[in-house]
Length: 160
Image 1 (cartoon, one colour):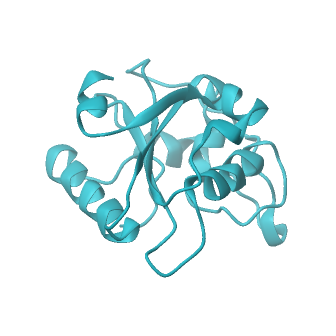
Image 2 (image 1 turned 180 degrees about the horizontal axis):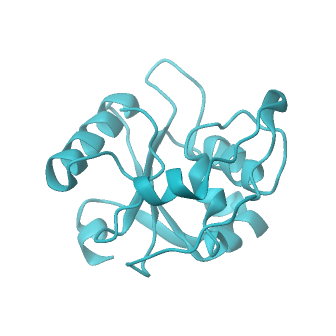
C-alpha cells in the first residue's frame, strides 16, 4: 500500500466497510483503485451480487472472468469520479458502485466483474483527490501505464 500512498492515494478501506459507511469518501473529484491484496488465483461466482441495471444481466461466464484475471497485480479496477465541469464526486460515484454491488439497480456498469469475485467484500478501495486535473484523463493515463506493465487492462476495466 505504501507505493499507492506515495502516489497520493488515501482510504484503503474494504468494500464491506464502505458499504456500511460511505461518508468517509471525499466529496471531491478524483480517481480510485479497487485492490486485491490476496494475489494469485481467484474464485469466481456464477452469479455475483451486482444489480440488474435496465434489466441487463451483469454476470459473465467464469471462463471470461478467468481470461481477464491477472495474477501478479493488486490493481483490479481503475475508476474515475467527476470532471472539471461536472458535479459528480468520489463519494457519489463510489456510492453508486457500492450500491450496484449490493444488487441495487444503479447505473454503474463499469467494473461489474468485481461483484463475481468470491471475496469481493474484502477488496480494498483507495482514492486520489484531483483538484485541477481532468479525472478521465488521469484514469486513462493510469490504465495505459497498467497496460504497458501487464499487457492488458486491469481485470474489471472493460474499456480504456
